[in-house]
Image (cartoon, rainbow, N blue to C red):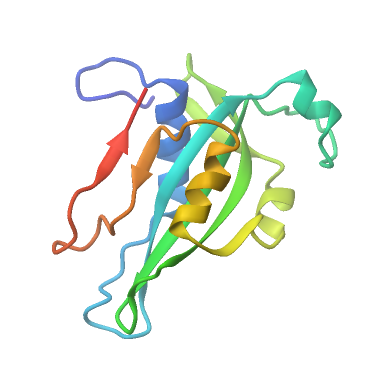
Length: 157
């Protein structure tokens, strides 16, 4: 069961962020190998999944229905170019159970199998794209794995 050090249970957004970071965050020693790349979750906004979304969705309905849609932007750093000014983003659907403290992807084939919805755009454009869904509760513009990067992280509840 996922809990904070204080013993308080995690919120739905915290569970979503934890799942996204476990899935996408990748720390490699980019200074040691020019072929390695750090990847991190830069922006996240999440909304409860509603019947209105079901009506406008092109995904096939399955037994397990999502409880949340998360719009996510990923960013990278590599040894050759540094922190990439271009980012990718997609929507992911998750089943979040706050009681059991779990978050799992739903419709993975559809979310992971396609090209990103937001592909190779600049950071400012990705912020506008994310905000179409709502205000991001997680913002991490600089590489969290590089000690020289500043800690410009914002997590909101």
